Length: 295
Image (cartoon, rainbow, N blue to C red; front, side, top):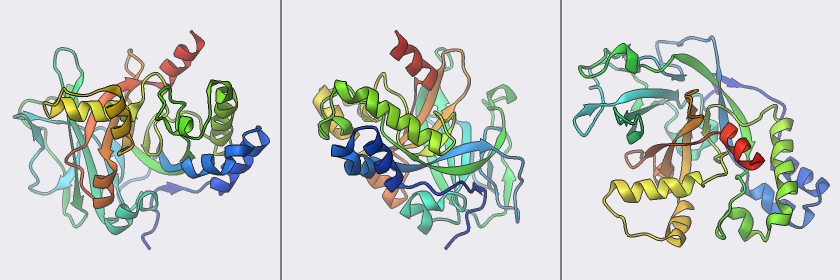
């Protein structure tokens, strides 16, 4: 079994604890079902650790540490902007495919519109951590202003619950929960976060999305359709297709617009270790969620 390099150890918390909290809050009729909806994710926390054995560590921003002679990724003829790299030796406990590929490094890049600064494309790929590695030099078309602030990160595992969904196909709706149950459910989400020493993480790997105003996975389904030239869709189709997507990475860049950025991937691709159909886009942050709820 790979060792969990960089993973912070916290008091054991599991789905049985989710069910117990649900019962205490008055949601006993769906306590076990709610526990089954919980998904493991990992909060990315700033760390001072450095690379071991010349293998890149997980980090956000800066220059990517790529295998020597690996070309800088491009999208539509433009060099992509580096976002993050995750050493799967630190994340193997989150997904079965990552246990299989625990010696790999997962890289996240995107292209942003130069005028509107919106994310218009994503490039995610994995490389075997066989090295040697080196910080990749900036390609023509990018400057140091295009580099995100660099932070080495450690992974802290946490159970996550889905955000309250407004559409009928949302997971909580399928359990029979209605608007009258929302206050109890959100108390459950807060209790689960508090029990794990967490609240609305800034950056997270896998797990459920935290945002409410529009469903992140529905948006991933929409982006996949639009970027493939398919604009024939209805809300019911998007909501159904959203069940086939997973959040891969959430990054909060501290922009004035108070938005988080998401990388999402088809669930089947994640199981197969495939990332070429990943989507990236901006979405409302936790602060935006709080403002929306208070309005």
